[in-house]
Image 1: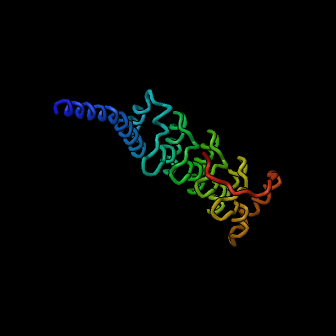
Image 2: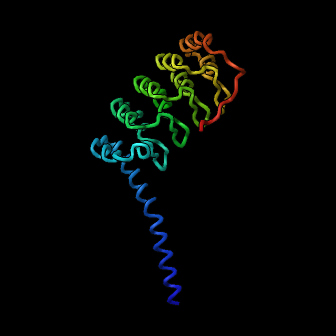
Length: 203
């Protein structure tokens, strides 16, 4: 009986040792993202010391959003630039497959989109529904954003997965999308499109 208790005690101790690092990492990630949400420069800078390639790209456990997604959603160019300078990956997607560029397109945050594209954001990245940032911008009828994305190589004939429609299709069907449609049509000469194929989530 004594041996059994000893074995159980050792097993419990081993489990606690195994769980402790994971719990600490979760705590570090949570605290880091909270500090970013609060724009606490001191805490964020401290958290990034010695962990540049890891915690800067940590994800919220429930939404999958990264620190960069948080700052882009907040229209915060200064913080977004700071995070990118510390190694933030602009192509990490959240639980719904949305990358920071999707949020910039949705919110009409043109400066943020320009920053992301200049730091290697994939202009044709798609979310879980197969929507590209260009499709999002077309649905918002944001002419300036559409122009920016097209100039950066966005494909107007890339179709989503849900409806099988491209940015060009959505603009064509939108009775108030004539201005956007004109821009897309003018860009078609630069896009040697293969037969339209449905896109899936990026890896």
